[in-house]
Length: 148
Image 1: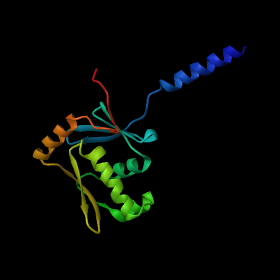
Image 2: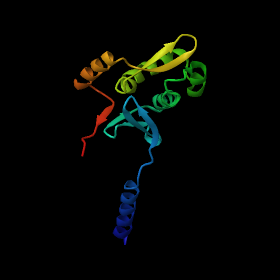
Image 3: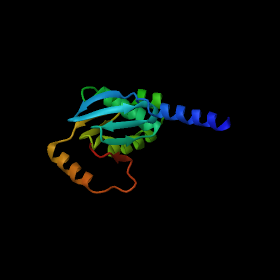
Image 4: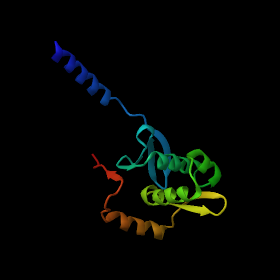
């Protein structure tokens, strides 16, 4: 009798793990299709690159990506929403630049005493980013999935 209840529990766990995962569409950015997975603090780029973030990194990146390159994001509301001081926000932004924005071909520009703005990298800088991307990175936070 005990084994029957165990097998039912296992089969229900399998069914739960096979359910589709809801992805939030961020949109097309610099020719890359970007999606977000809220529960896992994860960005999926082109369906083949998963960028893992901490909850704070995820919230900050989401705010910047949703604002786009048309609108600067004010620093004060970001700091208040994330409960960070100026120095911590700067460190977090440095991490995000390397982890997510450079692979997408974006630059985060700091506007002194105002906030941040996303800009597209120049073509020459894009080529340097691609060359750096080809070299394996130690302890990287991105996972590449093979194409089918």
